[in-house]
Image (cartoon, rainbow, N blue to C red; front, side):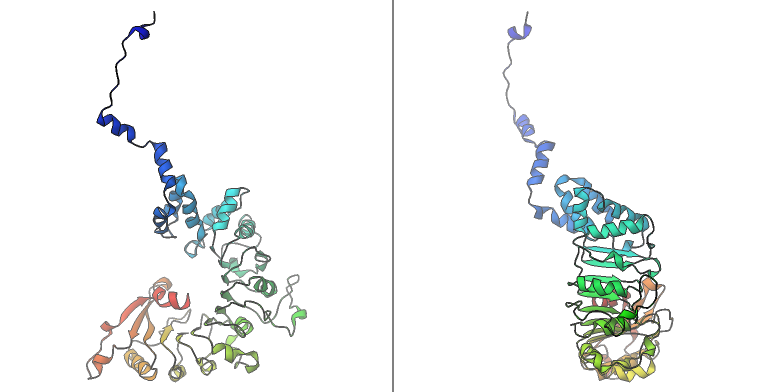
Length: 410
């Protein structure tokens, strides 16, 4: 006998509590709701995470499918940044990820806008060299590249025929002139370039000077038409500064720069220097004197000197357009460019001589390179001292090297 058929069915009633429970979204419906949220509601969450916080960004990629793509864009945009440029395992993991034979790997590689690798890859070593070569071919939207191989070994072949169009290239390898002649013609969107060059172009087959380049410009006059920021030694600057609208110039001398003598008018250097607004002069090796440039820098507003020679103090006062002066340590030197004793009077004279000057930063102390500090003087600090009262250094600011250099010189 079927007892179910004879048993009286109990009428179901709906209580308010039951109704409320029935209306609670399930996990499935919640995911549906989240997927329907407009992107602008969760994009600020992703964008608020610092790009250097790789761990959090990676976890965010795994949190929800609905935000995975936006989180991956944020994570992969910087590729490997300067903070991690010497992390070999990270570079290998990153490059292996974007070079896999999958559509996802191709998509991730397309997100990369910046990449920095510093002194860890040896020429043709396994696996990093081959991974780097393949990875660069995948980064089709790359805009900023900072690359140095171990020992600065020439590696220009990595960029020949590259699929991307860079806005910034910092190339810290030597003897790449032959490759760079072609690369700089291909990279038509370059706005910022850092490059050291030699006078002679070497034949890559036998490491001898290539006589076929004798008498020719080091780089083609049509290269880098959009260049605005240039860093390099004298060979690079004389080859690329004239004929371009460069307004920020970092002259980083090599061993031979001080032996060159005066600028040659026929090279167009005087006219090119007259367009420069921000000028940094110096590095590890001895630098040319400011005397070489003082009559050409007609529009300079920001000037950094690494080290200061006594005869250059009167020259500083001739640059009437100056708004900011930075006096830094010469690389490898422990001598302050201006000693603490007498610094106030030195700065006072600068402000009195230069009507547009508003700020003077002088290196003050340091524990290590990353902790170099500057003493900052601003116009107006001396007003209380006109009657002879003591200004005192407590009215100046102590600022970090990052604050001094980041916005001015990058």
